[in-house]
Image (cartoon, rainbow, N blue to C red; front, top):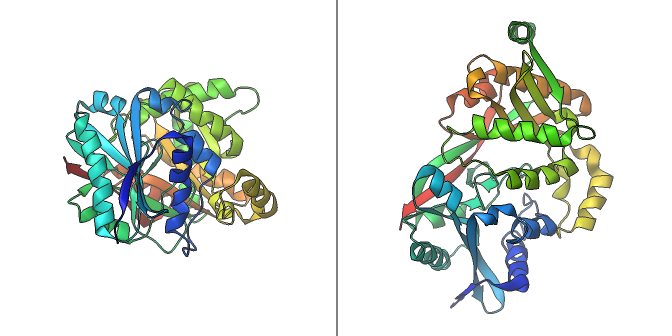
Length: 373
């Protein structure tokens, strides 16, 4: 059956684009509906500081009045300045299992990017590597944890059928809290703490939040700079994210590490609100508040979203101290499981920390694709 591709414009168009995601998961019990309010905030080009250096254009595929596909074309100028390339991105991809629909959507993206001087298309990123990234290619039997992507298995075939190749895989590790604890591990942690005069404290939301956010920003931009695809996050972008962080983060899960009084690293863990939001079928704020109030005790998992150590302190075991401390502090708060994600497939140090220190199991893989255009 025929269909058309439509360029999204205006508030009503963006609203349709956001709400169309539900069309593709009607019978999927592992789908966690996003909060419509959060999606509107993320894609608000006037309020999200990401768009001060980036452009985005959304497209819809329609058959009659029904939306059967969607995609976004993205140019991140800060990425291209950092890496001295001309990479465009795609994101927010959803599609029925029809190769011709996917082909038409991607053709619109590629044309839009080429018209603006890009010579390759990479993704999915929603809308950047600092947000939700990657296409799930295995581990479809479980819902995603907070701020991780989820999609049907056939999306991989649709994208690969358009000559997109793997650029990089991102790993997620399942952790069982307390499994790593042993006398030997405790002695190791104590030795590292003593040798380097380490002190660990939780973030101070009430009295020192602004200063602590500045510390997190400094470490994040320095520690992740060598990583593939990394782009420094601007002050405004970090503040934008931090404002959201304050609403649902738990102080005990956000830890700062100092060595001899000098800032050395931090870890950011978040309670897996998806365990509750999976019941919020319409993605409304009111519904989310209700389910959080009535089902908060269901949350027994956390996501270790960020764990980093400044370059001059790397290779000394500081990351293992943070991993260990996150687990130890979260266990009395009812956290039985965790996910360390995402970790680049070739980041051997972080993979070692997740598996050898935390006894984690690689259980999901997300892929970033790329194609010359």
